[in-house]
Image (cartoon, rainbow, N blue to C red):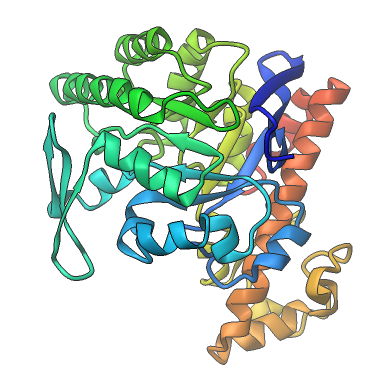
Length: 371
């Protein structure tokens, strides 16, 4: 099975919403797809086997964090992250570009060298060049590898955004050279340009000229309002190749995902399900529930009567409320697992609606449902 080539098939469309399938040596991914985030080789608070039970088909790991801990030597010794964390399905890795933005106080950009970090762990100097990013992702044994890009913070300054496109394009070319020829894995380019259509189109066209297996929209979900994000997707997704997967990085809430699917996006990742789980926030078909709220103190109903993973349908909202109030870690584990399960059911219903030609009705019903 591991000699199978990476491929993408566009199966159906309902207006701009797309139903597809990505094939990799480690399994298929039905799109639109949501990837739980395992930044450091773990989906926070959730056992790996339980992630399998949620029908999750792919997870995300992070190049920068895994470079620092456990490091290339250990990852190589285990043959990659799959064996290290006991995950058998595909893995996509973020290249470290997001950390260039999120840890901007700890790094500097050098066009030739790459991103020069001061480790947030021990202060050591870390040079993450485009070549190094690809090398680390190969050590992780990622199935989908992302190019290193410069992801600027939210800004209206066109000079900053244009400079980031120049840097990212240069790095993307170098990443492709370092990636080499490997039909069993995929290399995705990342478009920048902020909320400006002309800059986004420029970035996309430069990436298409280089040629990648998939294309991501970076530099969104960085603080802009949701309608602004949807507007730039509406303006620019038509410039992306129709026969390649489209990935919106770092998104998001169920309504973020639904609105982006409406604009033709295929892949998503976000820490939202587990981060919310750790704060007592559950996503359900009854809406978004804050289980800290006293109204759940005597509620005997489960979050989802159909979810029997880890007997989640046997735990009442009252019990979960009690765990939260008692500061018991089990509350975070149970709600995080439930949220990942819900997200995957939500994606399944999106795919079904596209297949049936009823996506617009599904969209209208749920686009504001979780506000």
